[in-house]
Length: 429
Ligand SMILES: NC(=O)c1ccc[n+]([C@@H]2O[C@H](COP(=O)([O-])OP(=O)(O)OC[C@H]3O[C@@H](n4cnc5c(N)ncnc54)[C@H](O)[C@@H]3O)[C@@H](O)[C@H]2O)c1
Ligand SMILES: N[C@@H](CCO)C(=O)O
Ligand code: NA
Image (tube, rainbow, N blue to C red; front, side, top):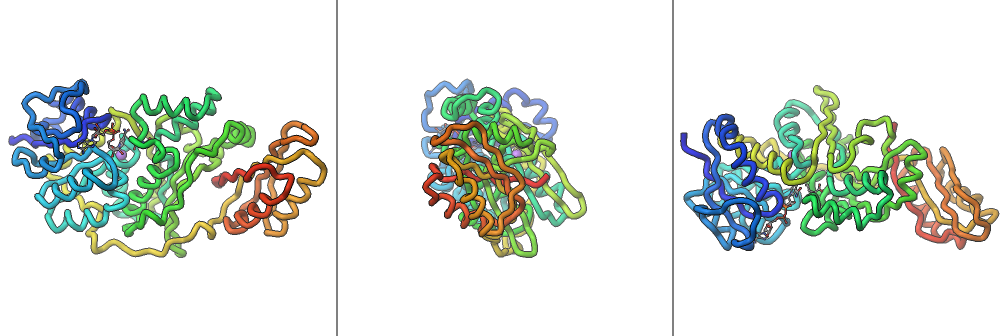
């Protein structure tokens, strides 16, 4: 059988990982794909850098777009990253040249995925992107193929390995945020710009992709509510433990009669929920189908091996002649849906205040909450330091985001409240 000829752009963590995996498992992959899968051409920034992979005999391109026009390339693998620039130019050129695109680039798909799908359809090719969401977990295949007969009403989970790794190590070892981030970078988990991980943007890219697939909808990336983990402190992690929760950065996409809501933020997850125990670089994705019921997938969400595994699975699909529409249906069939604003969210809340330890402070705070119709489930104060700062934790019953925002704006103006209050939403039991 004719080999499948692969051109790879970007030889960083994932690109080098794909080359290593294709070499290590060549016979197995040929048997599964029905033909050998071989790399014929590459592009990277530095030809001479030692990446632990052999580039001898491969066509080399200083400009990655050259891969799209190389007759020795059947499928273009884009592993550069970024929603714009060379990655986008290469994706467009590959599609225009009638070549299927395999990519791990969630930023590109979240921002330009619908336009790229339209171009791919016009050129009778597809885009495969298993590696873009939750690394080695076959979540795109699960949603786009396995759940294809369902109306999916909710997709949620832990979608960023770097943040989950940082939160886990902070909890287990009491180490500092910055110190743990350096570990995640060394392990190849973090984005080229780690603020994408820490500020929740990477998880939001993945959530937008999952929501587009799950709901068959055009998702405007800018409509995702995004908060990251920078404000999570050791003290919040300790309070969570005491109250029976784990703090996780969650991505949650829901479709109700009111519309679609999309949000990424840290959440208190009750210890008895399976997602609470997903630690380290592991991700988890929970999807609810009307016929399948709940489906939970977990696995490694980042790193060389798991991500390469997902890229190569897409190459094997392509070699087998499997052609699935980019968003699981024709681009023209995607729905426009109403977006539910964050102010309409119903949730319970963990609120932590730093206040001066003096009589009457708590009464002032609880009066404001009462005025906004917010009822409290519990309250914690640790330590005594008359006249000095002490942390106070308030756990609310379910209320609206609009009420909590308005109440906290007033609480923040009390002279005895020393810092902007910390807010973490609580997942239902
Ligand atoms: N690392 C992971 O765990 C992981 C997991 C899933 C998805 N991804 C995605 O995979 C992609 C690659 O990530 P990575 O971790 O391998 O990043 P990386 O920074 O390690 O590698 C990117 C490579 O692209 C090269 N590059 C940059 N500009 C280029 C250009 N103009 N032409 C050719 N090469 C160029 C860089 O030199 C670098 O070697 C990104 O889209 C990322 O979001 C990464
Ligand atoms: N930086 C991403 C890579 C996997 O997409 C993460 O940490 O999850
Ligand atoms: Na995946």
